[in-house]
Image 1: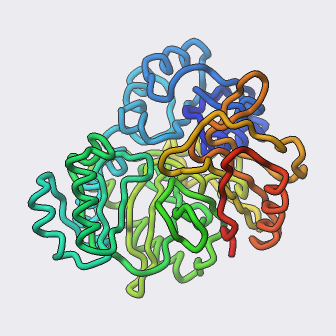
Image 2: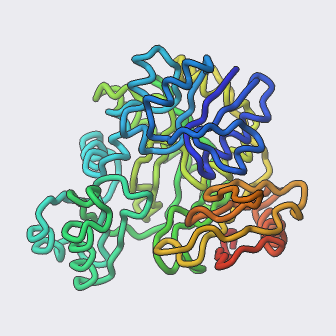
Length: 416
């Protein structure tokens, strides 16, 4: 089997790494890839949003399946174009991708299909949003409607900060066009977690749980990021909670897809808040989460290519999906200043000195003059597994001591 993976971050590195260990996979290409991915796949200099070039490449190389990592090409309709060209692709179509591409679309879906979620209103008029802001209480959740690279959610603690946030999103275009429409929600108290699931027309199968840490600093303080680290399984998951989520969130979501004629095939990521009243849905994403994927795929024992093929053929119910009993952790090393302004091009040292059972997933790196340098906010994810998260975490943090680049930042409390 020849597989093309679209994307160039840590999530795509984890996908390529998993596929590279599977005997049915003969060749992996990754567009555009990164220096870490280049060790397990052949990187191709095509941008992940250059749909025409990706189609051309897939045809030339007679690719069996294209796996789409990031959300942007899915929202742009990559799947629709590939399918029109008779190419097999793993990832939901443009209509389904609106579940991530528009917060208003996804909230409307949740409300119509009886999913537990926060009360909300959507706004395109700044003055109206400011006039209503006190109705939601404080803290309050303000979301840019469109894609904002995981940073379009702000939780102001008071009226002054809320109005400032609204102006930044709607007037100052902090997130570009993503903030032309915004969603304001009531703040939910509880423990945040997420669940990834494989989905085809008839079946939804949750993966093992993972806990992501979004805040940039220890103790869940500082600005929201795309994720500072994850571990799997999440410490709050019980059989009772898993059953509740399956019945009240996942099954209702699948039923909603069927009722709305949403031809969803691929990965569904559900962000959840576990409240006193049970789990409530914060958001949908339509692809593997990053860096949840790094922890979850590290534990997946079933061949990913077989699961992907089953989803495409609507035979997910026929696959037995198993995971390692060991627990996994991924700690992100980020550029100084992330998630705001940061410098690129800092040389990374120590990557060749790590223990054999440590895997480094590259998120934002580049090869310059034979040296690996930083090329993004989240740079690399240091990943390990052991009999429990504490052991895996100690192993990761011991190895992080060997790595260095100017301005390197990471959280020291991912598993604690």
